[in-house]
Length: 372
Image 1 (cartoon, rainbow, N blue to C red):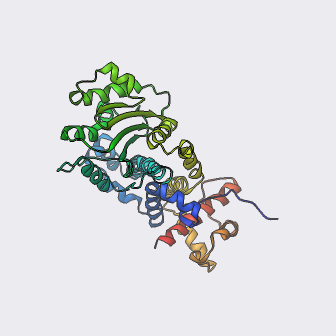
Image 2: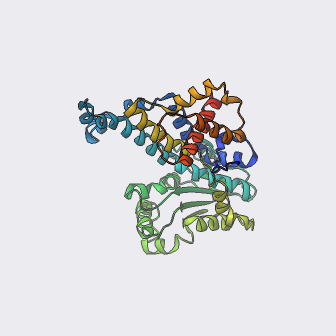
Image 3: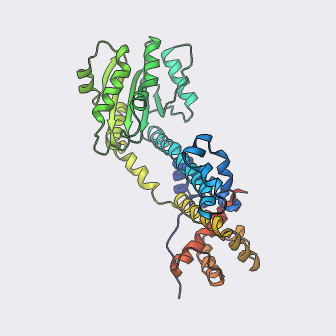
């Protein structure tokens, strides 16, 4: 009887057009996935401890744990802490990059923008030429599109949520705008400076965010009072000739703002973000590599055993060259390996879970081999 296993979709093992689309958007977090897979296969997580700063060594109790040499939990803690610190700090930094790539994709594919650069340096150069100012502004831009025919530019600064970060974080949303205004230059281009809050939740901090933005711009827009600014920013407020500032909460408002700016009447823009999200939802690379790495780190730290090593042993004993195994053969291979696996090292009691775990190890090993 054929056994049907839970499906997996590893983008790093696929090259079809759908997967390439997803990989382009998810490139920042796939890069983190690759780092996890390399460390897992090379059993190199302990090296992450060396990257911890001196503050964490006393504030997070690393030094204390290191002093307790005869206690396994204490010995495990520094590597455990360093691994999860590495993962979450890396992920936070990359999450925003995925949002940037999504917006760039929308500007490139659904609007009349002829120039949608990926590199911030190119975005800065476009603005430098549009405003004819001499110095470089060394600040970040999340997405930018230029329609040369209609002399229009959209500059987007995106944040995942508005309930993280304090006054400085909220004010920083208009740092680039402030530098443009300080140049005193005018432009023949119509510029929309769009601030987008991706996850609006209940928009509880909308008023606070608006007031922090106003406070940051106040000295440069004296003719606009706070009440007027708060009332008009959601619809778009002209703060200087040809320069409009707009705040959008949630992906629907962000899409509508791009649609209104573009004036191409392409209704697909209104559903584009949801469409992209749907297309990049069903993938397994990151969550599997992170979960397996966490379990393997614990197993190796406490017992000195690596299931990756055991997998390699079984592959060698059975003369199986994993690099030559096709992806559609991995289910069959996992079932075969599970029938041979004698060690009680897979951290599950259920046979089905054991088979799935062994198969995930095979997938992650195959990805690693493809990177060599």
